[in-house]
Image 1 (cartoon, one colour):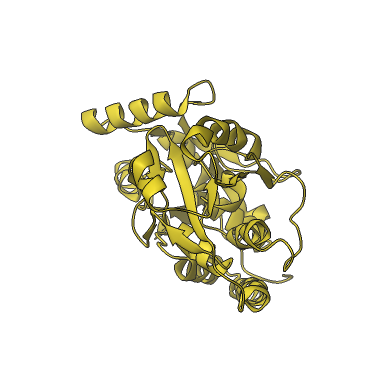
Image 2: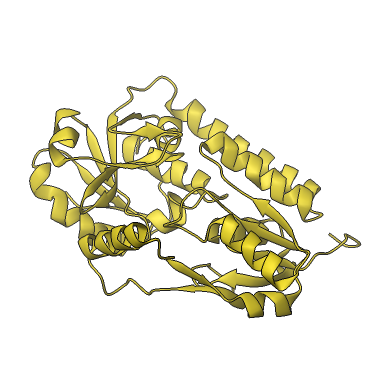
Length: 298
């Protein structure tokens, strides 16, 4: 993108960080959160911190989140002075989920307090279509509209290829477990991913927040396949969680998927997630994903 205008970008959302790098404008990114995935060769400053929950069980994480919500405490800490020192032109943030990232209101308040005049783009996609739209929105604001249009076109082509491969096949009933203690049925764009992969989502909340449910509700939905995709876990962590739910599905295939990379972050890799899910549901119709994305547990 020789000759394009540049901006000093700050991303307060892991999925937005992935969008920026996918658009080829990672050199413009000067600040990120502690949860963002940074490619080799880049070193933006960390402007949002939070608790490392890797030592906690899913039940303990749920209790921690509920306690913070009850007391009004923030799950993330904005390093406001560090943000001001970066002098960003554009800040990418969200209001979709206070468990996933810092809400935009906190950013606006901090900018007002610091007297900063940064532009703020809030990304709140609820569906797969809206995720693709958000890529174009970032491209438009980051002087990378052509790159965004090219990327979205390629993503749509891959989705179309999966749709063609599975169009005449039976659509298995798929339960995606987004959390295991307590169990959560998948929401937002995840049911769209299942549908795009040639499945029928059950115990799901398309376009809405994921919601706590019961194992009995999952069982009553009579899924043909169970996919365990706990937010914040890679495939190894997801597989460990999947093994804890096996007693609830003694005669149903149970799979684990790299949720962080493929399912829960609303960015370009959701299309990788569709392809991975299609490989679970229709293994003889699509190519198998690279190692480390999915694994069958039972």
